[in-house]
Amino acid sequence: MNRIAILIPLVLWFLLAMNCPVSGAEVGEPLPDFSVPTFDGKSFARAGFAGKPLLLVFWNTWCVECLRDLPEINRLAREFAPRGLVVLAINTGLNDTESKAREYWKKYGYGFPTGFDHSFAIGTAFRVRGVPTVFLADSKGIVRYKQSVPPKDMEERFKQLTGK
Image: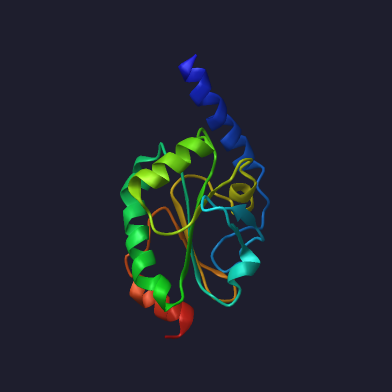
């Protein structure tokens, strides 16, 4: 039964990924429109950060790499948010629950907002194929970075994103 409980969401995720639209959040393309309620009771939408660069990470509580990389994202948020970078995390909702994600977020005390993608609609729009997936978008909403790890050269990338 446990194997089936794990296998079904993974198969669904694969099928969703295979049906992703051809356009999406790839480097050089605009970010898809999205809106997600955050754990602090607010809502975060693409329109809400127009004119600002964005660092966005998709994650899950069961993801070992997320456990490794989220502290680095948190450090980047502390360093670059005061300089104008918007930082957001979205739990994909795949084989996860919102209550489990909230507990995880509270346990580790991350200082930037996160939300929960109940239907994987946002993940699909962004063509997320695994977690973590990290995006950097410039102030015009164009994706400039998409990888499974945070950028190691963030200072240089931030200068490119902002011209500062």
